[in-house]
Length: 68
Image (cartoon, rainbow, N blue to C red):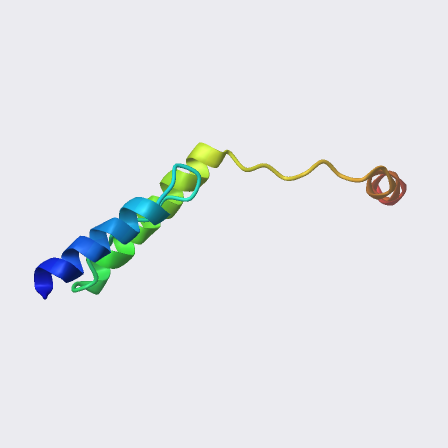
């Protein structure tokens, strides 16, 4: 039964994890280690994405000019 479970588990990960939306297996038996690993995945992902604030709307810029 265990072999069937691990085979199915690996199959799910192989089929569901994609380059666009990867899955990560994180050991959870030690919470500090788990938290560190999850945080590292988030940091690495955000660095690759290089997120940036969207440009301000012209109306917002106009209002800002009035205030300043």
